[in-house]
Image 1 (cartoon, rainbow, N blue to C red):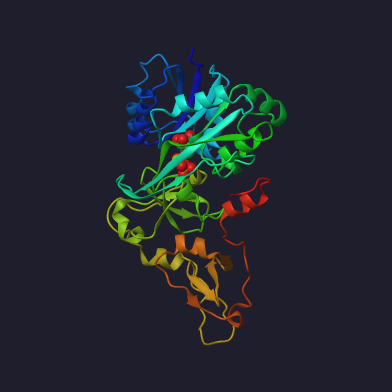
Image 2 (cartoon, rainbow, N blue to C red):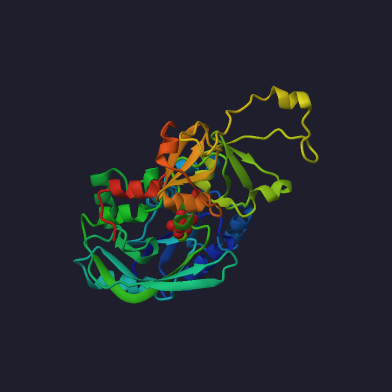
Length: 389
Ligand code: UDP
Ligand code: MG
């Protein structure tokens, strides 16, 4: 008798890929499974794509109906997984994301390995990783090979390449207080945090075969999260999965009408939805049609900004705002009277086509230095107590 396997699929706004993911479960050579499709309040196209499959009595569908403003308060897929785990009945547990497909023998090979090797409570397999462009065309691919028994699987093994015994769950919860850690700081590596919890009880047994293929799209979190500072640079044009362009303006995201496309084309930064939704929506009050015309009196009522001083003088009082400057090999951006250090990676994302203006330390020594724009993710990883492979 085959042991039951619980598969937990997390889904958010990938209508075409999520269909492939579900079908890859339906095409398994192993039949005793249950599938939890945990949808994190996706758009209609995605829920419609999923709805065609939920007639199957082995598939359970759940929608979180999360409020967009709440998205960045926790690691969403960890919340969904914990919810499903509390209902999972399988003796073995495995995870799937909406941009991954299981190969047909994925469940049978893994169940077989766990059946045969009672000294291991978790197994993992090799994975094919395909990078695709916005139209879904392959750009390049590589493999993550499962070769060794792992005592530290964190950062080496993907979310979709593991199966473990359900019996581990109670032990994890007793020791750590929850199954998956829902803390938002782990958004980009929640699987690794969970593997390190599992590793306190078991090593991971390798299965050399490639048993899943995962797709990295331009919108996948790993791509869009890279080189983002915790506070984004004011004045930037940004967009999330729905392609709507916003300008960040004093901690608000303000929708920019397509009519203004010449302003934002070629300089809009794609950011993860949770990052976008942490900014409250605001509005520019433009007149309905055409370029807003200002009355002379309206212009006169605007306060004069400080003069931009001459470059030739030794000391500069003010620099033009939102421009990139360089002192030797270090970058800075000037915002509202303050000079902010900015890392090369962040500068590349936010000032893609801008050449940094060279200045000297002598010239800016008067100016206050503000909070730096460094990638938040590097900092989080440094503070984690698990090693990165
Ligand atoms: N996800 C989610 N809610 C969100 C964003 C993502 O549940 O608001 C899920 C998504 O469906 C996927 C997993 O989290 O199963 C990882 O997301 P993604 O594929 O974007 O990240 P990456 O592959 O870059 O790590
Ligand atoms: Mg993904």
